[in-house]
Length: 358
Ligand code: IPM
Ligand code: MG
Image (cartoon, rainbow, N blue to C red):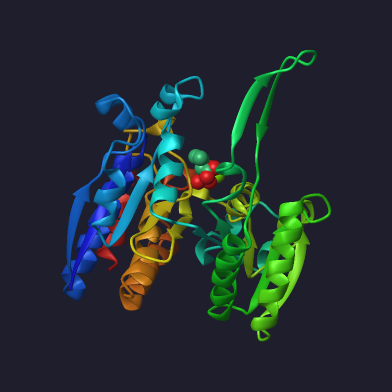
């Protein structure tokens, strides 16, 4: 089969980690007899530098002509919040999510066997294991609501960010979560703030309706503050966690941290039609950009998700994941996951070791 992949190398460490991931894709192509074709897409701070805006015209169309999109990372201090919106990398990220209809963001957080000791939680907690899937709504809520900024007569400037959710938006992300739970351990924890927010009360009522359609899946409501606490107290209790956009942004960082390395975690963003977008959940790490220090594993595991979800190549996905686990089990470490005294490999060497394991 032929597969066409849009590559958004982006900023900071983005280009280096995407190069290693492409190496892995090509190795899989050789081994399993697939052809992968790449289309470079300019997006992020690098696009601002090149053409004056972070989301150049036609970006969504190019991506839509591909079977999947792989993104390294975008952003950096050079294009900060003092810059006009069209020059900021974050604007481009939100725009592409919206334009490709990527309303479901899957962020798995699992302790990898070889790195159980990297978990910052108590040993007894880590021993119970962590293997959860955060399902974050990605194209609605306060991220995309109407914003306003105006002068008041007596309180200076005032701003508003509107959080809106429709039944349609809640139902489609809810279904994703229940379907995902059926492929895992049959449990959905729906996170909201229904004791305060009207959007959360609607969220909860739609989730309850769905829960009746999936009687084989255990369901619970969890308030977002309690969820933040449970994630550090007993993360092993969670299987699929579904939540709205901003809660998911915050909780997915927390979930990644408890697994020991944000440098290991992949993500997938998908809608009802192809292409889906795959990216590591870490950022562009401008402080170590271009130094062959970044951990390419999260991007490589994002490739595994791409094989599994976009191309339905389960064997190939397993092969990539096994290659990563073997590299870790053999003791190879990039700087971010090395303990004192362990020897460290760079981005390129880690990529090579993983390729050799396939
Ligand atoms: C993420 C990031 C983005 C978000 C930022 C960069 C806009 O934090 O993907 O989690 O908030 O969605
Ligand atoms: Mg985030």
